[in-house]
Length: 218
Image (cartoon, rainbow, N blue to C red; front, side):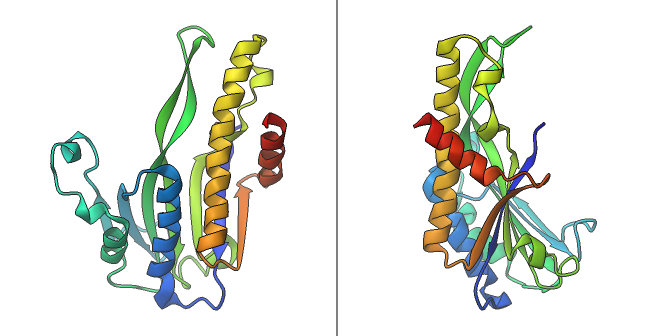
């Protein structure tokens, strides 16, 4: 069963005023791995997630941007500065970016289909210390939400008998796993985190499974 995948980050001697800089640092590492350097959307939620956002913006990154629309507001530094212009300790700040992950698109009536790189949304949430009863203690000062873990745990051996199909699936999933691990390692190296935790909503020890899968495929 598909599971939600997260990366939680804690920073040493963290001061709330340093939250925007920490967000920029993590988003830069994501852009380095994804090759897509701009923010797709931003929002700010007061108190907890049951409240409507007090700030929300979706950036133009589609064909209109390619035709000359101004996308400078979507540059990481600009988007973070605008969303966090008024820092509040009871607020969570959300930023969406995208990367291209290999996804299997089945054909009609069965598993015949193709692997395609599909734009997939990743959400970064930066928590104020008073947001949702100090949720940062469990979730991290910053939490990265990768969505469902399917792009990394797809098991080709359970799906296909055909050796070529299994080999192609293994190659595509390997690329997805390498991107995920590249991002987490880049954050550890460049963002001055005191601790990080790659985890799933169910509590399954996914990090060990991903490393084992990558070792098996190499």
